[in-house]
Length: 160
Ligand code: HEC
Image (cartoon, rainbow, N blue to C red):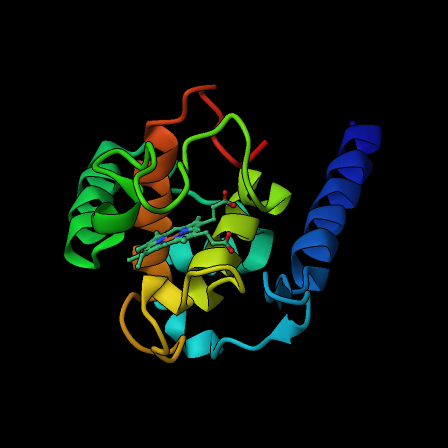
């Protein structure tokens, strides 16, 4: 009895420790690996907050989010350069198995690429010189990524 009580007390404090000590993830530019700062206040939904804390995209496999992400993928012209399912057009395919930037196999990496653009032909959020703080919000980028992953040819979730 007492042993169990002590065990559960230890578990609770361990849990408190891990959650309390969890630092937010840091984001780096796909262009040069430098740190990019995104105002924490922009992570304004439960999913976005979870992503900021863990780097994992909670919308993967979520039908409603995938549907919303598809809409944004069209609305923000991703479709024009990457094709209707992200299979590739003038821009590269986004659904694997390989990526130009290896980190785009992860959702955190893909988030950074979409948020801040690349050196080789894509501006932030896919726009030329658009400031990264305009346009898609973090929550919407996560939806777009959920849509892209739903088309993954290798059934990768990016949260692996
Ligand atoms: C004007 C055309 C254009 C638009 C619009 C555009 N992209 Fe891109 N995108 C590109 C090109 C070109 C590349 C390759 C860049 C490079 O090699 O550096 C790219 C690269 C990417 C990559 C990296 C792929 C890899 O293999 O690592 C991702 C992810 C991506 N785009 C997502 C998006 C999303 C999401 C949107 C919409 C918000 C979008 N793009 C809008 C042209 C575009």
